Amino acid sequence: MPLAPPPVLPPDLTAALRGRLSPGARLDDGVVTAADPGDVVAALRLAGRYGVPVGGPAGRGLAVDVDALDEVTVSRAGWARVGGGVRWRPLAEAAARCGLAPLVGPTPAGRVADAVTGGGVGPLARTYGPVSDRVRAVELVTGDGVLRRVTAEGTPELFWGVRGGGAGLGVVTAVELDLLAAPTVHAGWLQWAGADAPAVLARWRTWSAALPPQAGTTLLLVRPPAGPDAVAVRFAWTGDPADGADVLDGLRGAVPPRSDDVVVRRPGDLGTAPVPGDGVESSLLLDRLPADGADALLAAARRTAPRTVELRLLGGAVGWVPERGSALCHRDARLAVRVVGGAGAERRAATWACVEELAGLLGPDTGGREPAHGFGPSPDVLARTPTPAVRGRLAALAATTDPHRVLEGAGRRPPADRSAGPGGHGPG
Image (cartoon, rainbow, N blue to C red; front, side):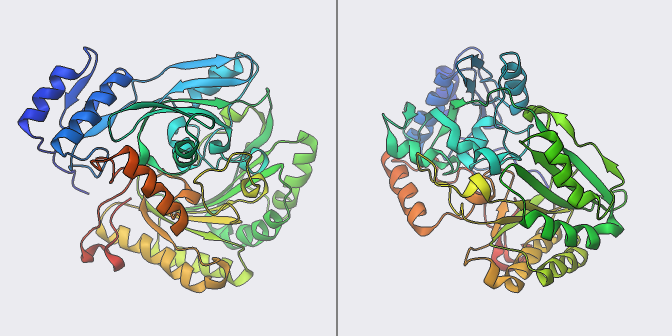
């Protein structure tokens, strides 16, 4: 996929930004690399003044990079404060020194702030709920260029929206969230050869449907750009390890894996999926996966040749009603299907077609939920297709905090031309 050209910013805006940014900040090719929250404030205020969008598709408007906001503070009272650019691994390492652990998002390599705004359904979510349920406060710069501290008590409506509502309500500069009290988990990955996919999927389908909330699992059909196909299953058990081993034997005893690294480890050491890091994706939420649906999934994967097809088990604490509601939708779904394809119009179209085909075949099992296309790793699977009520509530929030609509395209992707595939959906 060709890289988008750097955006052409108004010369007056470029000059104004250079005069307002702190000495440690940078402005290169339309990207403001913030050294402190004040740089984010300056960027959004000036973007509004000049009518330039922020955080939208590459090559359009101004981007704000907060990776340098890397504060990590852990309280022994059981909570942490992290900057907007902090990933889960540094937080997990700092928390471990205090006998604590974070509830990690879908991947430990991801940003904490992205899991908060995107919902964050990680490997332990069936026991402890999504990341967005454990937030104490969020500090973010809204589209009007105001740095706000958002809490349940002080700003309840914005607190509702920023957790699971996506990136359109502001640029997050810091997050405060509750930690877990020094847990360990019986967790890791099992792997099989690609030829074992039918047997593994058939067994995983029935085995996973009966798992208690202490167990989380994901199945991956992997088709890397180079090398043989493979099947992988992630398992995480938050109860007694001996009980977890017995539960896992229900899968690995039926179809012995080629490799197995399931051991007792800390939540921050769960590792990432054995899949390529790039590509574009589509997703679908299900109430169940019938036997013929599993066959259809395998057939669609063979026909469209995506890089990975993921089945993520939901349910458990994901579906429980939280003490403080959030914009995270579809918590009653039982399974998430993610299809990740390569770059380029043909691959994007194949990824889109694979999920649309599955949506058609599994119609009664989707619960009326629409497929989601063209998203990257954030927001997470439950936050990609808000219900009309949630979408309207988020739009009302944005109207009050972003009068110039500078963040209207944040977290979205531009529509491609019709040659990119049915419906004109673009890359993720």
